[in-house]
Each structure stands twice: as C-alpha cells, then as structure tokens.
Image (cartoon, rainbow, N blue to C red; front, side, top):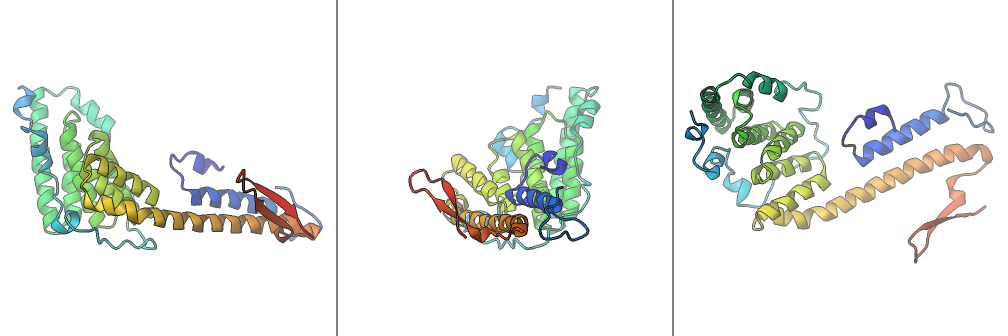
Length: 287
C-alpha cells in the first residue's frame, strides 16, 4: 500500500483497489513496448451555567417540520461535485491554543467568555434563519474560538449548528467533521448523529450513514427517518458492494490478461468454482 494511504485513518474500499491496481499496472508497463514473450519486472461558574441540559439544547437550530416529522425527502446526487472538495479549511479550531490561552483566566473571565459565545451563537442562528449561511458559520466559529473548553455542552451545540449551515452550502465533508466534534463532546446528541447521517449519505458513505441511524434509534426508538433508513439503506449498500466487487474483478482480470498474454493465455483459461460446503473457491484450468 502506498504511503498516502498508510497515512490516512479511513480509506474506502474503492481507494484501496485503485491504489493496488495502479501500482500493479505501473510495475507491468515500461515506456517502450516489450516483445510479447518478455515479462518486464517493476464567581461560581454554576451561577452562569444554563439551568438544565434541555434548556441549552433549545439554543440549537431546531428541526423544521419537514426535517423531523416527515419522511426525509432530501435528494442526494452521488455524482454532484461537492463545493468543499478543494476548499481550504478556514474555520478550524485550534484546541491546544485555546487551552493555553485559558490557563491564566479566572472563573469570572471564563464565565464572561461563555456569555459572549452565547451571544455569537444567537447571532449565528439569526443569520441561519434568513439564509445567510456563510455569516452564520463565521459567528459559530467565533463562538467556538472564545467559548472556554470546559463548557462542553455549549461547544457541542456550536459545532452542530455550524454543521447545519455547511449542509445548506453542500459542504458535506466539513459538516461531517463538525458533527463528529459535537458527538465527541456529547455522545448522546441525537441531532448531531442525524445531521452526520444525512451528510454521510450525501457523500455516498452508506455504511457510516446506516451506523449513525442505528445509533439514533438507540437514543430514540421512535425516530421516523431512522426507522425508514434501516429498511431503505441495506439494499443500497448491497447494490453498491456488488458494483464494487464487479469493478474489482474487472481490474484484476485486466491485470491477469496482461501477465498471461506473453504465454499465449488469458484469464478465460481459468475458471473459478465455489465449493458448496466450504464456500471456498478453487481454480480449474481449461485449454
């Protein structure tokens, strides 16, 4: 496997196959065509905190009736070019810098920063409601850069709200990152799982999407979209895997033909047969 894939935490099956076949093809080709018979090698803070967890979550961007109470009718096009594909990340949050900056702050100063972050969140919500999604992202980002790290619930909401704005701009990959951050801070945050599931589906990551919907049903067994997704997604995942398998076998067959050609053979001379008992495969040669 290439260094590029080794350095990546999550790699799709398609990327692994492309990487392997690319290396194999490169090792079998040279700049000059070889003869057919040659094979080439290669104060108290409690005074400032919200009264309850539910009160804090009410500050989150709410689901509309269409989003929550009705069947999800979002039309995702897997061939759509994502607007965040090559865009530089300008809204990243440097947690280490925040941690260093907070070391000398008093409790009162931290509480004051929390209140400022709350105001920025409200401003972000107001911008979101009128369709100014870029501005709402800016406000949520400002809130995340000033809200002390100890206020995990508030920071979780800021990340989740920002993901909603990014989804409106079809920046699904970034929305996934923000939802994941929100879930890190609150692993029972249903809205974050729901928005991440939608973003996963928009980027054709159906297995991850299904996993999030399963988690949603653990948190809320009555969630309608999750119930529908558990019926709707498995056939799509199976279809995708079958397509991937055919593409993989096609590439391997092409490589096999390239290797066997100097010997006057092709992959058609070899037949795979599945053992009905062991479910394994054996190769039969035919002239």
